[in-house]
Every structure is written in C-alpha cells, then in structure tokens.
Length: 205
Length: 139
Picture 1 (cartoon, chains in turn green, brown):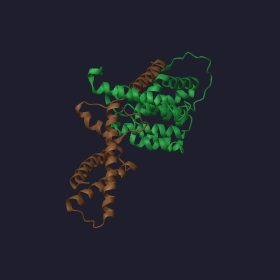
Picture 2 (tube, chains in turn purple, blue):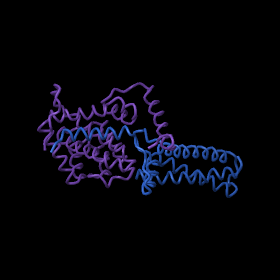
Picture 3 (cartoon, chains in turn yellow, brown):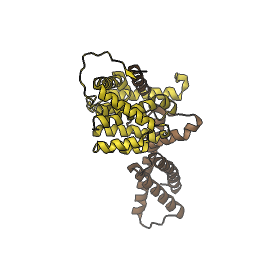
Picture 4 (cartoon, chains in turn purple, yellow):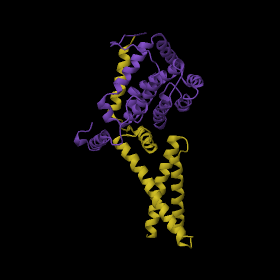
C-alpha cells in the first residue's frame, strides 16, 4: 500500500491536530446521506468508514478530540441510527454516539471503547491509518487539508447550509453574521428542486 | 366553539400526535424533550375527547377555557411537526439534526422502493472525498 505524493506546494507542516475535526466532518457528511439508502451505500458508507477510521487513528496518534468535533460527529451518527442503516456499518453506531461524546474528556478510554465497538476489518483499517500518520505525518496532514479544501468549495457551501454549519462549527470557516444571503438562495433552490420533484413535467429526474 | 368541531379537532390531533409520538420513540430510541411535548399533546387531546363525549365534567368555565386553549396549542404543535416532516420529506433536510418524523416516513416507505431526498451537493462532496482518497491511495 502506498500513498502517492501529492503535488506538494511547499506545505511542510506536520500538524495532525486536524485528524479529529476532519473525522467528525466526514462522519457528518456521510451520515447526511442516510435518507437515501442507495446513495448511502455507494457514497455515504465509505465516507463514514473513513471518518470512523480517522477518528480511532486520531485518538491513538493525537490523543485529543475537541468538543465541537464531538457535536458534529455525533450529529452525523444520529442520521445513521435514525434512518435505520446501522447494520451496514463496520462499527456499532449506537455505541459510537456515546464514544464520540466521551472522547472530549477521556480520549484514552474512548480509544479502547472505539476499538471494542469496531469490527476486525475496521480495527485493521484504523491501525493502518494510525501507522501511516505516524510514519508520514506530512502526507497525512496534506491529505487532511485537501479533504477540507475539497469540501470547502463556495458552490457547495451555498447549496448546503448543513455542511456550512459543520464547517463553521469545526473552525474551517469563519462564522458569518445573522443575515445570510446564501440561506435565502439555498431555500429558494430547495423549493425549485422540490417542485421539480413533485411535478415531473417541470424536468424532475 | 361548537362541541362537534372541538371533538373532531381533538380526534385528528390525537391520531397525528400518536403517529408523531411513535415515530419519535422508534427513531430516537430515547425520550427527548420533543417526545415530552408529544406526551403532553396526547394527554390534552384525550382529556378533550373525554370531556366532549361525557358532556363535560367541569362545572366551572376556567378549566374548560384552559382545556380549549391547551388543545389549540397541542394542535398547532402537532400540525407544525407534521408540516415540518412533510416539508423535509419533499425538499430534503437542511437542518444539521435528523428529523424523527421524516426518518419515520422514510423507514416506512423504504420497503416500497421510495427513498428520501438527499442534497445533490452533499452527494458530490462525498464523491469528491472518495475520489481524492482513492487518487492518493494506490495499490
């Protein structure tokens, strides 16, 4: 297994403290797809697994998990439980909610609990991510940064208030004032999408 | 208010509150603050129906006025829960927390091949993250 070097543009920081927040972001973004099980299987589930693997590896390598990350990550896990998709996961999502929450205060114990709640495959995956982070901290930091950059595109943030909320909460975006034009835009967009969905003659898919 | 109208409102509200209550219990698995409100709604509706059917055991006007006011409050709460759930079912959930009624609708309709709506922008985000990781990770 081998991580190809990303087009390095002079970034040389080896800061892995983002592992917790990025894992929470992935759990949230993946969990949000739970209302549609077909889409979830294809996109949401692999992203959630990556998020959980990073969370477990992050607890081992970095040993901390911020409160904001616990809030955002738990919210993502709640989607999986609410929409009844927990059997498709390689970890116990019922226990995960509590583990994420307890990781803020006691990361070491949460790490043991997280390993216990994971399947053998997931444990192996998390160990591999932890090894990788320890051996190549620079590549791992770059990958984390690129994941955030991929999500942080302006168009995505305009269209999904939920993702914008998570990014703001995790400190990847600066919070805006109370008057948010994008909210109005996204609301109008959702009404148009909804009309298209309900009345197929208007070009719904 | 006409007694029959009162009874009809209480019965409809009771049925809708029951479904909301069951969905909150089935989906959340725990009793949250929303579930407490639904329990209160159920009790108010049941009391209103009992008073309507039995001819009203209250002799004073104040408890009757109180019951009508709380029934109206319960109807507004249950109706807003349903409207919110239906709106989210049609347009997708924009709030960061899952909605119990929406989740309940989706789970009931899933065996019939009807799935809930997800934001295409969020599907794109997940696709992009997976692509990025696959690109970095070879072998």
